[in-house]
Figure 1 (spheres, rainbow, N blue to C red):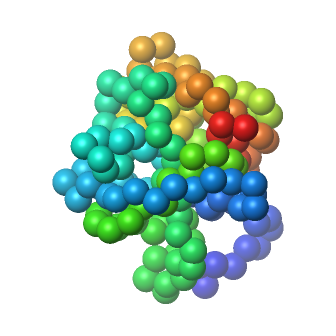
Figure 2: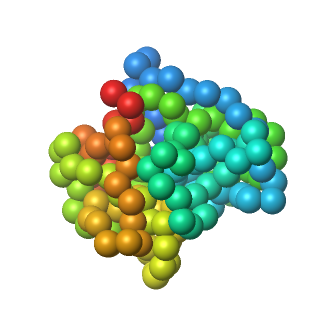
Figure 3: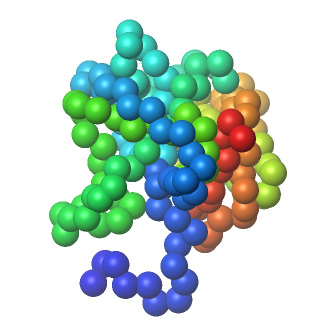
Length: 162
């Protein structure tokens, strides 16, 4: 069974708002020609719709983070592997806490959150969250911090606009 935890539950599920009561979530529309690869990644506004970072962005482009909707239970999409839809409403975290997937580096409480904006390589994808700077290939996100060290799978909580 794919949802059994033998040793430790994950730190969270990417895209899941971890402190719902104290968070602000805005509803926007997806741009079907620029789909999101996963939940919990940065979003920007383009022509009145939300799109993922695609390369070359600055910290000023950050509009929020794509939220995993609730409920999303399906035998076809186990927890943490769901693919966001390409049309319809998109929930965007504008202020609060959520779990994201850290693709590089070791997060630390209060640590700077970087997003990859160039040179994808392996797990390092454009728009992916990282805990280390890669010179011109990543940009530090203003107002975003790690709140803990996360788990062995790279799931870690961030705070945004707090």
